[in-house]
Length: 292
Image (cartoon, rainbow, N blue to C red):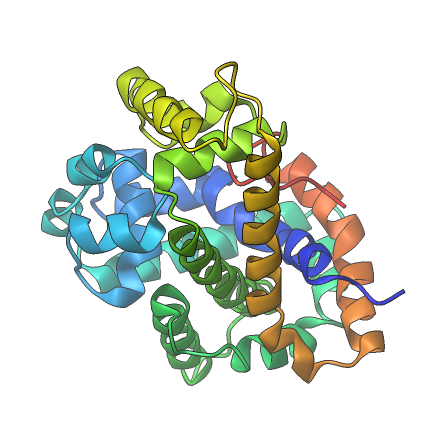
């Protein structure tokens, strides 16, 4: 059976997620001068766009409370420039994948047969309406054009990052079309049962007041019951958002045929389990990722 776009996202997200959970990455960014994990997160993810301010990051990332972003930027840029943050992140990722690979070489063995497929898909990501993906796509090409060849794991990470950020850009567009802000979007996600509500609220910096106010808005729109469950209209809205996201995110995967897409999922399925154990990637997590 041909993998769905959602299955391809779940498969590739495992590789990308290492950047958030492996201690080597946080340590490398801190050593470069960025103090505070969340400063490192916002600076690291936004770095290909340049030293952008909190308004751009809040609008692009969409799901974080603006006050949380304000605490991280622009102060992070006073500690370390975007190029230095990117270099530190890359060094941390190479160290993390190397440590995970030490036992049995499973990362290199799993990624080598499919890294060219990931590269082809990442190279087909559309730029229009995909600001974060476009920035990461440009950075990826800069890394690949370097005289020093990137390790297989870093190549795969860059490709999966471009692919996941283009999906994220598409998801933000779908949320905006549905009239949901970041806090409201998290409430509807929590209502699906995929991620605990309190985990989402705290991880994305929303206060209890923000959460309660967003609940009131969604209840008044007929999308949420007062107890936090989705109404029939809420279920339909959430389903429409996910369908729009999947449709838009499918574009780059069209350069691969059915067998090649199946090869990507088959190759990454066991690797996702391994990365969850060894990185380790916490499950459940605010991203909603879990091993296939």
